[in-house]
Image 1 (cartoon, rainbow, N blue to C red):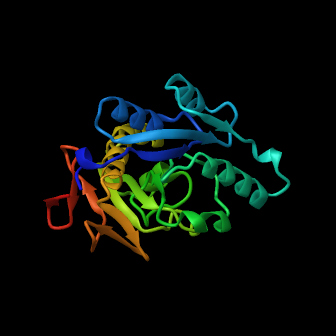
Image 2: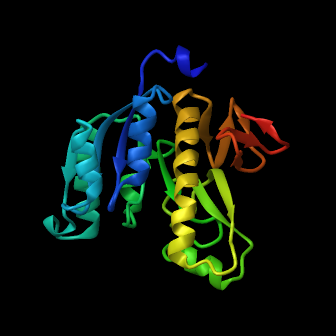
Length: 232
């Protein structure tokens, strides 16, 4: 199925804790006609998250739910995901959502929730990825879009984007240079999901029904490249 032939846009909910630049990339791609998606909800654990302001400016429904509203982390996650489910999304995108999610609430969303993480997973799950890459002396850094599972940043990777680490890079400089690649990567992966070409089968990522031997790679022209250098 091609993007043009999909009968209805893919309904997406986005979770974000911060400025929402990856959210804005999705909004811009949708408006440009590059993504057949409908952003049905943007939710945040931070009531003052800039991502919520971006969503409101774009006319997208928002949800601000503070963790302090619930007695436990598990209760908070259950309430958050119940409200997300009420928006009836087909896919949840974690785009800078800075919370570890209770595994129990993830079960119904298996294969329908993805995250963009600023490292070349399995390297550097968790926080401070740019600093850790620099301190390790890595020549390459990057970002990964992966399916979300109970393991922190440990779900099956779908695709990655690479950038070189330059001499003299600081974590802030490296993060800013990576950001544009994050945007391109997320758009490219969501486009394949919207086209029903990418899916999770058990623990394997499948492209057009065939298990990928390795994650896709973002090319210079924003296409995703299959291992063996064939465009997806």
